[in-house]
Length: 100
Image 1 (tube, rainbow, N blue to C red):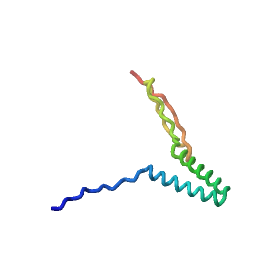
Image 2: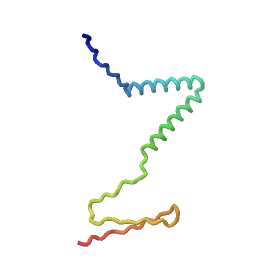
Image 3: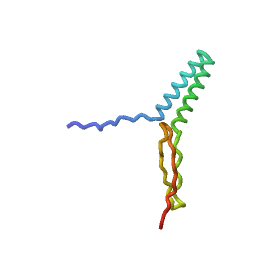
């Protein structure tokens, strides 16, 4: 009888290991650019920083304001939106009166 070997599970690559490889690669590229030209190296660092900042701001920007709190009043605001002309809308607010 032959003994079966236990199945070897493939190792999952670590995200930290991938990040370390990218950091080292970026460092080597930056060093090469600085060796070629110090001015080009400075401009490259500024460009990478600007792109990184732009992507961060674009990802976290939320143009929608938070909804108003609904506690504190029984009246519910009602509104209608009418389009006066193409691309221009007017919002008409009207407080709903609760009759009890």
